[in-house]
Image (cartoon, rainbow, N blue to C red; front, side, top):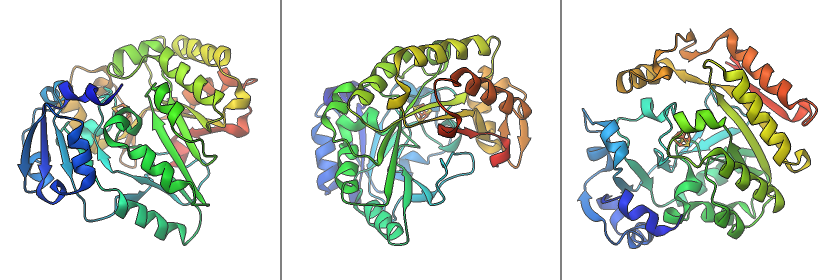
Length: 338
Ligand code: SF4
């Protein structure tokens, strides 16, 4: 993937007035020479419009370049794993994702599928510094998007690496399905910057993660990261429940066991699909034919999930990895964490 990849994907770029003069905005626009650039007053004028056709937008994403006066750092949500870290935060310098997974909570969270990039990260960095003054910080920087997938356009990961390298106490997680080994080869290796690859059974990837790299390429990227001694996390999350799920996850675990050295994996994350009921309602309205929309979830505390079946599924996955990775390096999300 390189900068030209985005030319057909972003034929229209909306640029907020206050972002137009920023060097970061100009740098991104320079990578999209064919795009039609449309000035706007505020990103919400476009992003928050009512009655948007998210399905149509997903087929041809527009890009919105904006500037956010407030830092975009938030406490981690209860549906997210904190990996034993109390000071758990995430950032959201990009809203929405080019991969468009069918189960993604973003479909219920935002009124638009278009991608918003807050081009200047300096206020976010300043906020992280304020948090670091109080103690160690565990920060997920790739939650409401896949930053690695759009790194050729944004350069944000490179900025995060430069920021993190002299910030003791800061641990960063980069969650991704991106398989761009060239990117991994050019970024520095920092012991507290973790690459967390989401791995799904081939059948799940083909059906529900159509725009993301296929499983084999993600595994190859994870192998490559391990060979460079990049701190590596494997995420079996969200596990989905469907007829034959056990066999599909058994095959996935076998591939992982065959292809990766557990000594080169820092830890693993196991969790089942869960989503806020509010987002689920919007997801059901937008893609009613999806098996994810039709499943009879258990609702507890405003979160829809597989309920008691979640523990069964995570225990099954952990059992498949027993003997390959010790339990003290496995992290789980299940109902009890709510
Ligand atoms: S890669 Fe992650 S953020 Fe992107 S669409 Fe898929 S689930 Fe959502």
